[in-house]
Image (cartoon, rainbow, N blue to C red; front, side, top):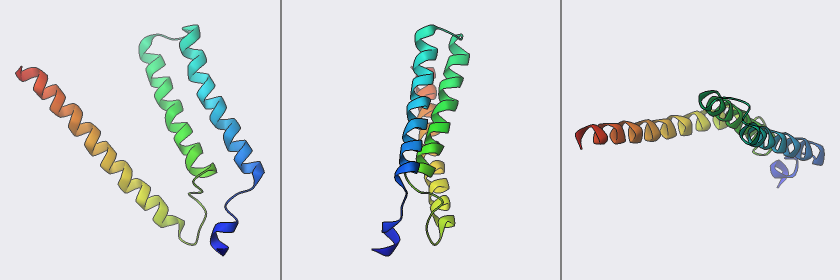
Length: 101
């Protein structure tokens, strides 16, 4: 139970929660106010989503903590490669399928 007791303090959880709220409110505001054109808006939302993912990893999933944090990062990289392969393959198949039919 010793390694699971000190995962984070209330301060880090609250800070992570506030960052998450901010990174959720920014894209919402951008969409509601029509601040950018469609392409810039899409890129901005994707970049903010990646930033929020990083915030989630560090503040809530404690990716840097533990005896061997390097293994956590390697597992995340493997997961990212798998997700990229599945998404890119699906897009490629859908694009090829639309050209055939």
